[in-house]
Length: 260
Image (cartoon, rainbow, N blue to C red; front, side, top):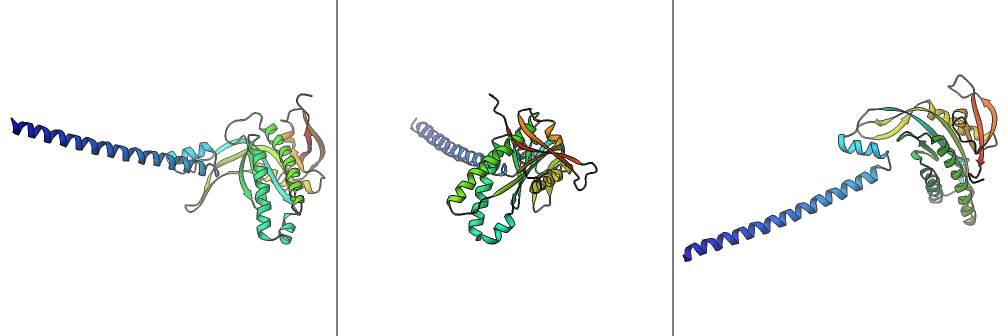
């Protein structure tokens, strides 16, 4: 009887130890899963700075894909006027501080109007509206973002003046049309980008702001989609390199109050 009791006690102790170890192992496994989940969420948040959320999710699930997709988008291209001259007169640390402050404010104006900053190109900004999902109001969103950028730039210039720094001048071009979106690059470096004539036209229209006394220019393709409340001035059509027909352009002066 004592022997049987001893065996039973030994089995009970063994089971208790096994159960305790199992619980400890389950606890360690749970911690690992939680850490892996946090790391994945951190990776997804970090990667979302470089590509749209749907692209990030596909890359995480299937790896990088070279699949491209044709989309109708409104492209905003912005560039600082005279920034090369400014970079020759301001020390590098101050220059980077000015540029980062500019990018921060312009990016906020774009994202608050349902746009996405696709790339910083030197001191230029490439932003897209309607690239992630169909958006019938993408032209309005792009125009409203451009106006918000103008207001943010004026406010930033007041801050720069208070710090004894030179003001910034910004030119913005808006064009709408088809683009091919996808991940391109090499094994060492890849990025999500958009390709097509629409991008080139937006950049060239932005360059026309220097000679047309307007800081925001939109093409006829954008103008036809804009709500009537946007205030536009028609300018003479221009011949753009690489485009057979002259491009209709309009200066965007403002937006009437919807309540008015």
